[in-house]
Length: 291
Image 1 (tube, helix red, strand yellow):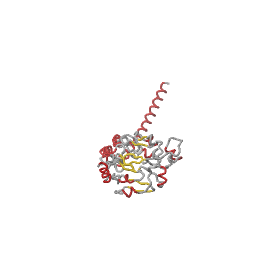
Image 2 (image 1 turned 90 degrees about the horizontal axis):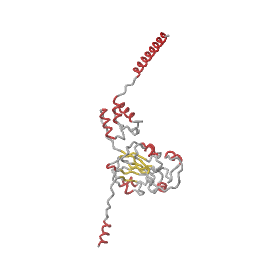
Image 3 (image 1 turned 90 degrees about the vertical axis):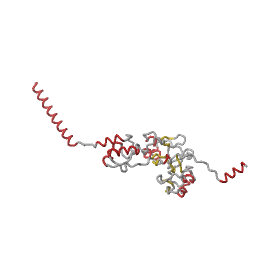
Image 4 (image 1 turned 120 degrees about the horizontal axis):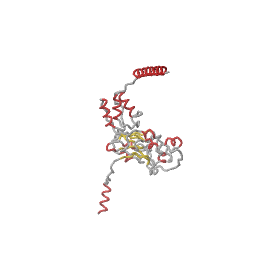
């Protein structure tokens, strides 16, 4: 009896050793050796996994950089130029400086500017409302204000203003990951260059309806009159489908378009308040009153 047990143990041990050897040789045959630079690049990235770079996560982004041996067309919006410079040092490549960008909400159809005509009672989702509803103001291009952009933001950088009903971007927290841009079913949010001293000029409207219809639903809608385009000395404004658009790469922030816009659809951000300049007539009138 004891011999039977001993033979059984020996046989099972032999089978186990044989199987282990097979597994070892198979593992050696098909093992994948990963480039150690992937770990270095991945560690240098912020680890936000926001997808703003165009890849599923920071690890995938690192793998792509190492695979292509190039930084051309690749950028980490969260880490910015500083992170890309670090990655470039790891890879022995020259990182291209990129202008920082920020999310901009291109709709000014607040409760005051776009009065409520209908009420929406349904799922609290912009995506759902977009399919069944034009909007409480009647503007089928305007912000629905249900906060899909807020839900998408991993950095707590965008919130709905309860007074206006519109999203507000916290520029200090915004990493330009573009999650809110993708989440907005009406393409109202756009990434634009932050600009010198964080100053920007943009058309805060995406309505493509004809002027009278657009103005009927929102007092600050772009009516596509084209006065801004004719005024711009830098050829930075185009008008297409009844809607003006300012190319932020051409815009020199002169603000002449802001002054001539008849509806106030063009906004200027982070500029100091303008000093009131008295005209000659005003000065003369003032002198007459004083005398």
